[in-house]
Length: 80
Image (cartoon, rainbow, N blue to C red; front, side, top):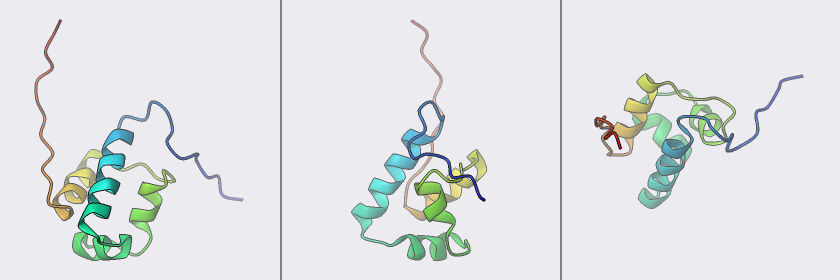
């Protein structure tokens, strides 16, 4: 039997990005399938990422952002 990870796992480093990407996809009015076609993924990948069954790596996040018309930008941390 396959293990399914719970949605919105606290502390996962990319959860906040996934939330923003879902909101952006819905704002654009495109389906998960349409986004998969834009990015060049096989069917079901976006669903697994959005439902936290799989966790995207940084490399994939770049292409996901591009598919949504977003840029990922790294900025230096400001020490207190």
